Image (cartoon, rainbow, N blue to C red):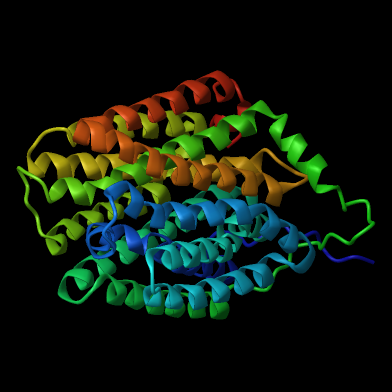
Length: 408
């Protein structure tokens, strides 16, 4: 005799609340470390005597490592469990994060950032699959949005702490403090993450032991999934590029802002914390496709506002741009597992591969546009990325029933 089929923690239950808190903490721990260096790029560039585009490689190397690692982490998670995999990942990342500020050379820093990215890959590679297995389907969109809000708050924390500390002390102190804060968030994850009940391990040689290549190929043959992967890569690439080079721009005329002040603009991340949580609720009423396309449109509007050479306009534009991005990312990333039954972890990993691959590539490449065309070069390059994402989404996702209210 078998027990009742596990349908997931219902919204409002104790297990649901623990899951939300655990994934929120995991998001904070991961993204505070991943992007803490973004808050100190001008100081890092000056201290290491490198260009703005080269300094941005300290962000790109970490996201590249993460992109490479997500698929291997997903395989480990299929066999060893989601929670166990995330625990290993988060501990390794915190240890490496503490070592980064002690880098003797810029090359050593890049190598450690790459290794840190490899370790961090276990969180985004597994988090949404863990959530999908442990939370009821009706609550998954809202829960996914809450997880993404944790990632936005983590990114804010990393940048907001490291930036001012780098001006008062050094960029090394700023990054070290962020890593210690990430260790606290990691401890919260360890304590609160509920025992998995929906996970069934993949046993080697069993019917569920589908070869990795077949799982990946099945995902890549689905045009809907490929379109969602493109959303992650293109939108994230544009988003990271804006934040990579904003600090450099604000030190130039007509702003002349010191780092401690310009770092406060990372508070715009709070609009992303709010919008990512709201996106799931709106998707239930309006549909995922509407939210995705609308959020990308908000990104474009906010980006164009930043062209106005007035601090108020830059702040307003950044708030809109950030809110739009996180709403789009929360929608696209939670849509992926809804389209997949076999190879769910691999589908989420492919999304993350595109997401962080786009961050690595465009986060550096747009720097060349910034160098040649100043801020208008960034606006033009990022606008192309956002419009391309909207065109792809319209072509592949507009008629899909899972993107509309009745199926969401």
